[in-house]
Image 1: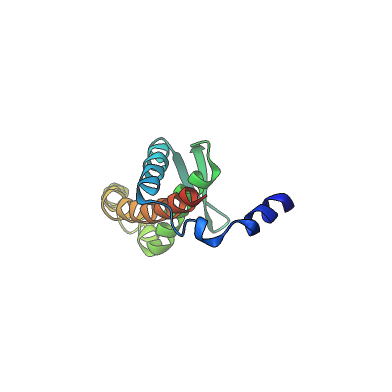
Image 2 (image 1 turned 90 degrees about the vertical axis):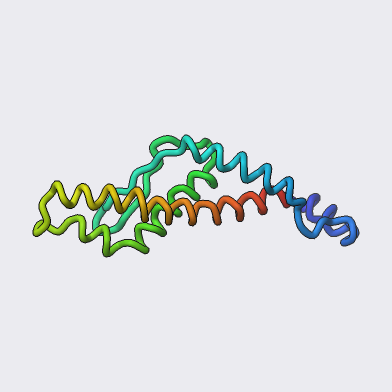
Length: 129
């Protein structure tokens, strides 16, 4: 670590790239996104707190974390909607139908939006290394 730091401080500033080339970031985004295709997880409420458990890992903890963080952020954003699916005044069939439509249309869109932003951030970070 000390050796690397010494080498880094000896490198002229002009030789260090300021930002990774766009094609490197793009390639990294493709790699991360393809790994996320097979990733699976579930949200589970435990003692009043929502938790994310990876069921099928990508093999990369940072990418798994993106999947869980995106789901948890969107769950927090839509907490009221999720609470409404527990309303016993609405029939279970209707609640289940409402839940499916909500998950497909609004929750999934939120998760993919959050995920895309985090994938781009991780890709830029990795491409810069």
